[in-house]
Every structure is written in C-alpha cells, then in structure tokens.
Image (tube, rainbow, N blue to C red; front, side):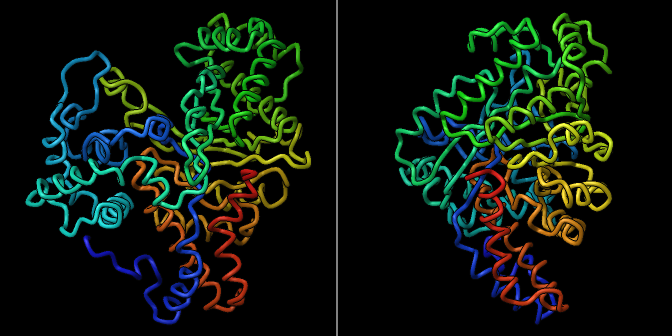
Length: 468
C-alpha cells in the first residue's frame, strides 16, 4: 500500500503467473454478485452520507477490532457501544488514530489486503496507513465521504454490483427494501430470510419472537401447524420483495426428521421455556428439515452457516452484547448430522442447500463427498475466518478433486464492510485464477477450459446456486 501490486496473489513462477494473468484479465471487470452479506439496507434506502472514516472502517468491523483487542486495545476505546449505555470513545479521529497506530498488526492478513484496496482504489489514498499518516488519510477519506459520489447508492453503482442480498430477521418489516426498489439503483438489493430468532429456543426472546411472528402473519403460533404456516407466509412476504434465499446460523449441522406428533411436543416444550440443551438442539435440527421442505415448495435456496461457538467471552457479551468478535470455529460433523434432512428431501429435484462451515477439516473428508453425490447439496465458499487467499486456495484444492467446481456456489463476500466488497471479490478472483493456472500448468485442464471455469467461478455458479 498504497500502490497495489498488479500481480498480487498470482503464483511466483513465471509460466503459471502468466497463465493466471491471462485468465484474470477475462473476469476482472465482471459485475459483482453478492448473494449473502450483512450490508445495512438503510444505506441504500436513505442514501445518507457515511458519517466518518472510523465508523465506516473500524467501529462495525469484527475483523478489525478483534485483532486490536488481542493486543490489548479495549472495545470501548474503539467506539464499540456498551450494552449498559456506559461511555465509550466518541471522537472518530481518536478511534482512527488508534487503528492506524496498530495497523502493522494486520501485515499478511486478508484484512490488510481489503483495507489497502479500499483506501487506494475507492478513496485514492496514496500514502501507507500508519501513526504518522493517520490524520492525513482521515482528512482525505472524510473529504471524499462528503461528496455525492461517495454516497451509498453512487458507490453501489461504481462498484459494479449487479446483485446484493442483505440478511434480515423474519420479523423485519422490510420497509427499507420497499424504498430501495424505488431508488433506481443499477443493480438489485434483495432481502434474505433469516428465521433464527424465532427458531432457536436458546435465543433469549424466543417465546416473544414466536408470538410476534404469529401476530404479523395472522397465524396461531401456539400450535405446531400454525407455527410452520407462519414461516411459510413470512417466506412468501420476503419472496414478494425479491428474496431468493434463506439463511440459518446454527451451532451444529444437526438435522432431525421427527414424526409430526413428536415434533409438536418438542415445540411446545421449547415454547414453554422448559427445553434442555439437547431438546433445543433437536428442535433446531428439526427446523432445518422443515425449512428444507419449505424450500422444496417455494424454490428458495437454503443456506446453512454452522460450526461457530458464538460469544465465547461471557465478559464481552455482558459489556457489549452479542456478536462482538468473540466467535470461534469448532469441530463440526456432517455425514451423520445431515442424513435425516437428506433422507427427507436430499434427492428432491430443484432443491438447493448451500452448506458453509468453519471446520476446514471436513471439506475433503465429508462435505466434498456429500456434495459430490447429493444433487441438492452445494458447497458454500470459504467463510469468515477462511475468506482469505490461503483459505480460498485450500478450499479449491480440498474440494475440487471430489466435487469439482460445479457443486460449489462460487463466491460471496459475507460482509458488513461495504467498501471492502470490491476488494474481497478481487481477492477471490485472483486466487481462483491462480488455482486454475496451476491446473493448466500441470496438464490437468486445457486453457480453453480454464477460461470457461474462471467465468463460472466468478458469476455463473452464483447465479445458478441462488436462482439469480
């Protein structure tokens, strides 16, 4: 940084690097498809200017503040709100300076690649970020943010985003999405149905959320049949607003296929707040199968994000609330866990279930063989901690030989850091081209096949997987 190496992430040997260059040139400027992420739809409905560099780059980004916390910087000193409303750092320039002083911590990480790319390519920054340049870069980015060309809608079009899906609670009224449809963006912004708050009995407000789901759908969610019907109606509400997918964030991949009367008894136990940890996990597993059945009915792609021990620190959760960066990958089992759901619907024509995991050890041993035979199962791209050059390359190497690329979902950026979207897609495209170049160089595929596969990995597989 600031000058980006045009050959970054390409293989070091001359022949393979040249092949990667040629492949990348054909897909570098393809439109961005972002079918799963956490951008705030209010950005595009309201189109207000981003407030300042600190709140654009630092305060909302778990990748940034978890690294700084690991080196002794308190979340409160980075402006992260406290759950009890106690004071935290409010001055964005001070927050930015703390970030810049610690920027060396990100050397060699994907976060460094993303931020360097955003500063250089989006904001035209020509100096390396550090303590001595913090104020200069802050002023430059802040000045850009005041310009109309840096409002969310203008950046959306400038980034070449053709499709972007947000992740929305089943209880969200989607009013922002209604306004977005009238905004005249060059691409589409659609919601994604995320029912976790009304599916997880261990969510603190599960009972209240189920009751609210009943109110907004006019269903009796005190009964099992009424509860399932409420989800069907809510999914239809999302589909009317452009949704093509659902998303389910569960701690394990467990699925169940219980008899209806057993499922109803389990539901009532959970609703009464009497469920044990085992019963809560069984209920979540049953609901994955129920959601898969609903996807057979309505055609929505089903995404499963599993294998994270969320909120690992009780102290951080107490001070700052849920989802503050203390989420850790855990070992995850899929072969037995997914079987009840796959026995129920795994061979249904047209069903698409995309599985994401934080347990890389399962890619070659379990997930690639499963996706390599079940027509409904698709491998999601490397997620979260492994959305990195090494993680993407490992994924291709561990899954390509068993599942090929045609049982994968391409790439999605899964981010709430809006200005990192072009950078993340750039990294993915470069690493995919590096992998394809290695297959050409050792004679496993022809160059014409590599050109075709590069395009499929960039956009075509995403469109197929998400029905875009």
